Image (cartoon, rainbow, N blue to C red; front, side, top):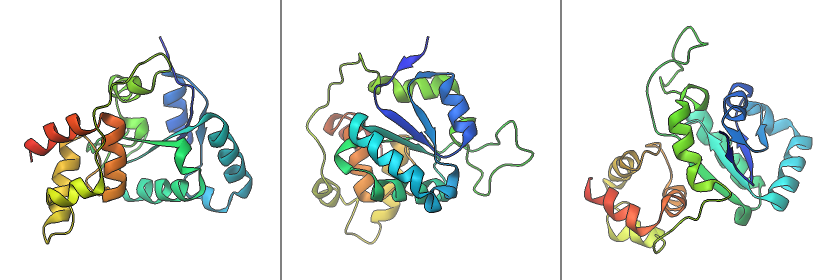
Length: 192
């Protein structure tokens, strides 16, 4: 059974879209990778759809995915976007002869079970319980920013949460709050 998602789901490529179309009852839109940067028409459509329905941005955990996610964040209405992150899993997609440059699986390579788990909190009928939100000040107080080893500690925290290790402080806070807020943060912090 497909998971019903009210927001549009934005992914990098056509194979990501094919994978999610088999799992979700949602509007899934591929930005065609870096082609998005020059495609003004697609950006206009994405802005309009995100404004009307909201958007979930799901990009790969590699450097390219991070660049595309940041670009999407800069062009879409911030109050209408949610960020969903896949964990860093190393391997090779079935259709490729070699692993990616960074060796990480993208959206298309992640198991259907894991994708279902990731999207479950966004199911239109799901009632999510979020504890108190986390802020960038919390990261600072706990040494995940503002110290010499903060980026290393933040990478460990991100991994404990199943997020990409190269995530920025701001996006880390957003992701923590989408995942469940303070309760999730405290559990992950305890394992770092």
